[in-house]
Image 1: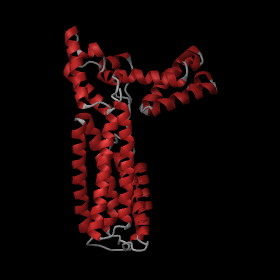
Image 2 (image 1 turned 60 degrees about the vertical axis):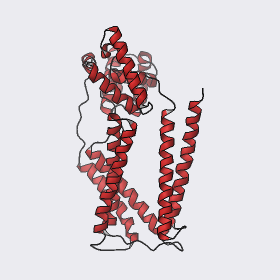
Image 3 (image 1 turned 90 degrees about the vertical axis):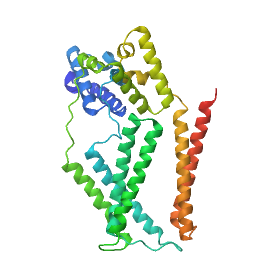
Length: 351
């Protein structure tokens, strides 16, 4: 499009740089293309260099991103908000990776004093797929819960999802392990290409749903902010929660302050502050929230890995079995990460 505008390769380079910046900042590809088509039309009509008309491509891209975020238009992607097709393909890809790890665990069994090679049953063959599916479900549950509920409730719902999912997986694997053929666990390596090819086939045969980009006009932007106060607060609360760097108390305090200010001026929230997503983006972040949450999370993970390792060692009597060493390594890694975030949390609390 930019090549046709003036026939200059430099214009194409400018457009490619701007496009990369837009997409890297999570703008939907179809919307980024539309934004650049509009810019190319201006370059064609005026026959001017885009660098002279718009400035450096990355700065121009950041300005467009800021405008659309403040307008509250649904033109941004969340890499973890997957549709059904993407979730299925990702689950199969994760299953291929877990199958490779399963084969690696069989290699560990060849070490002296290690447990014997585990037989590969129907249940064990399906385990990577079931775990992959549970991971994708967990991501979907957390992303949607974190936008609707407070952080603590979202984590609780996610934890309950893990518990229920683990019980369901165990309920399927154990009975299936008692029936059907049993082969050497080294055949788990064959599961890697099986799940890999399945992921490729699904991605090719199941075409993605066509989504028409919103028309970016002044009317569409004005329509996006036609909200009453209750709807404004709901959307602002959801946008603030998705940021992940503000506590629930701070979010509610901010919304109370905004409501009080709008009542004092006699204007509605949308007239006083504009689109709720833009208002949420403009608020300064609390530098303590993220490191505090991650410190607590990795402390819990460290305790979990340590507990699982100790329980396995006590039940089997093998304190130097490979699985116990894996749990020990995970414990040390989680503890080290917790210490790193704790230091960041401590620095953020300094005056």
